[in-house]
Every structure is written in structure tokens, then in C-alpha cells.
Length: 549
Image (tube, rainbow, N blue to C red; front, side, top):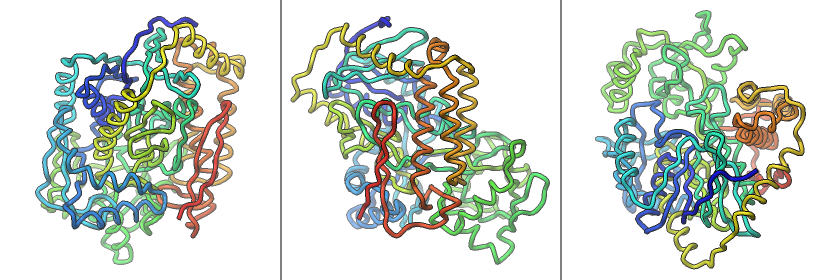
């Protein structure tokens, strides 16, 4: 296999969400030549997925808030959080909010302070919205910059190293294979929700960056903690459900209109619905997780979701959070929560775990950085609302500062084109060794993959379903030929199969319920917490339990 194109830059950034754009802008300001790559369109991923009216960013509310903010993050992390990341975030988020203006957003401070999702304490929250406007502005900013090359619709496939040092990456655009020589790669490819049938993310957010990094020598952790957030099946599919509306819910019904769970009018369930109105994702750590479990009890292969009915009092609430969400829902989506039939179900959302990194985004592989949702940052068993975008700002900037220091203090290798092609072909040969006679097209393989992940790795998990899911993924790989589908994204499909296998393996290894992870056969939280660390060697995953204080 010969490369169709080989060129060089100082830093490769993979991903054009907030994290990737922040990193790119900071690198350019440092005078570095950057290649920005995305497997979709420019301004992509979860950052520009218009699933709700606004996104929030929590800001540390002065010196008095530092201990309280740490308490909020660590408590909801339930021993799975990363203290070194938390302290850095609390110290630096305030100074980084303005960076959003550099990439096309116009953040503004909320009129009122309120606790973010899962938070106990109220603090300043900045909001962003107008995704199309922000995207248009970002294109105006970035396409006018010097020293920047942008590659859209280009898949990230492989990292090339010489001994322990990163020297480049391999990408595929159409049927062309491109090698970019670079001593630094910043991965900002997002989470893994694209491998589920129902997700609040675009399909290109599929976790391939995780596997590529692991194959280069990085490690991952907390992968089993995937957020599932209720979203609309009807009246408009894939629209985010506003959890705060739950305190006005009068009942949950089956699709046959049979009552499943009484609502706030029944004093027996009032506190349950009130608690559920305070946070978006499923979490075993709250008693009201029973509401989410009721949602999926009714699911069959042909029927999914439950009907929620509402009191007219919902539209009388004048709180800003209600006004913004309900107005957006009605004006942009054409949905009236009281007039329309509202059918919801849990959708895959954020990945709380990811690649293990330092507070500078360093993965432990020289020259390789991970920022944004692809990394295991401040989140733990749960993800505190208002920190995702903020984390991209703080750690995107720090990763570039570290990368520039690495470039300036390291004697960098100049490898030949022949070396690069040889490395890539050896990787291909290793993958091809497991190839068999082909049974599935890439389209069919991806459909099967999503069904397996959805059925085995949803909210409810148990040993049998997870083991069966892993076997089904292995069977899929045995019947899917990379060679036969080589010009139809087979390498990406291979990486996605491996992502789902890693996910299910981590879920199987955690024999307890904690935060976003629920095991029906282990419906309790162990007293002694541990993290599951994932490495990769010779196409196999190596899982290790590491106990934490």
C-alpha cells in the first residue's frame, strides 16, 4: 500500500468540536503549523449537534467556591473522578471562558445562579447557543488563518511511532491514504455514542480515536460509565428531553396507554419525580433511577419508549431554564409538552471515561495528547453538568502549551517515506491476518454493530447479555472481511467493532452498580472502589483493576 500523499506539519489536531478548535487556535497563536482533521464536516461532533436550546459552562464563583466546587465534582464522581484534573479545572476555568469568542461562540452569563445538573451548590453559569451561527463564524475565522490546513471527511486510522516517539498519523479521504508527518497529535475525537442505535450524538462520534491511541501505547479508564439521557422518540426524534420538566409529570404510560408509574399528583411518587427533575442522565446513585428503569421495562424489538403526560402548570413556570427550553422546543422543534404525545427513551450520550491523561492532556506516549470527551478528565461515575465545554477550554489550552514545550525541547526525528509506508503496511498485515471470507457489507456490519451495542450495553446490563454481546461482536468480526470492503470504510468499521468490544468488556468487569453503570445482577455499590484500566497489546485488551483511596 502506497500513500497517495505525504506532507508535514508541527501539530495534527483530530476533531473539530470545541476542544479541537480551541487547541488549533492556541497552537496557531504559538506560531505552529497545524493540520486540522475531521471525519465529518468542519464544526462537528457533539459540540455542534443542535439537540437543545443552550449548553452551559460552570465557572468557579470566587475563592469561597473552590472547596464547594471540588466537593460537587468529587461527590458526584463517586470515587471514579481524577483529583489532579479537578483542581486544575477549578483554578483555570474562569480565565478560559473568553476563549469561546475566539472560535465563534458568544457566551453570556445567566441571569440567575443555579446548581448545574448533579451539583449541590449554585454558581455562575455561562451559556452558549445558536450552533449554526457559531459554526458559520468559526468557518470565517479558521479558513482565513495562515499555517492551517483543514481536511474534512477524513478518517483517522493509525499512529506511526519510531521507537517510543510519535512521528506521524495515517488518514483516509475517499479512497486516498494520506500520511501526515508530525511529532505531535492532539486527539479530540469525542466519545463513543455513535455506536448505539439511539444516541444524542452524530454518527461520526464513534470512539475510533480511543482504539488508535491504545494501539499506540496509551491507556483508558472508566469506559463503562456511559451517560444515558432521556430523549424524544416522538413527536420529533432525537430531541433532548428537559429533565427539569419531570416535576410537572402527571404519569408515565406504556405505548398502549396503560399507566406504568403515577406522577407528581400521587404523594407516594412526588419526591421521586422531584429528585429526577434535578439531573439529566441515568444514575444508580439516586433513588429516582427507578424511573429510568421503568422506561426500558416496556421495550421490545418492535416497541420502544414510554409516554409522559404533563400538568398545564408546566408552562406557567417563569424560571429562565424553563422559558428558554420550552420556547426553543416550541419554536424550533414544534413541540408542546402538554398538547403533543411525548414519547421518550434513554439515548446514549456522553462518555465519562476515556484515555488516561495528565492535567496537560499527556497520554504517556511521547507527542500524543487527548482532550475533550475522548479523555478521562474531571468526570467519574457521573458527569457534573456544565463542565464538558469548560474542560475542553481548560485542557485544550494546557495540551497545546505542553505540546509546544515538547517541540521546543526535543530533538525530533526525521523519518523516511519508506519507513512510514512500511509501518502502515505492517499494521494492515496484522489486521488482515484475521480476515475471512466476507459475509457482510460495511453498511450491514455497522447496523449489526449498533444493534449489539444497544442491546448489550444499554442501561440494564448483566453477565449473560454482556458475554453474549462480546461473542456477537467476535462473530461479526469473523464474518466481516476488511480486504473485501477495503474501499468502503472497512478499517473504520474494524476500529468501531473493537471500541464496542472494549466497552462491553469493561462493563462485564465491573461487578457492581455505580453512577452511570448499572448491573441488574449486581444492584449495589461496593464499599471498596476500583478503576478499570484498559491497555491493548497484539489486538487484545488487557484489563486491570486498580483500587483507589
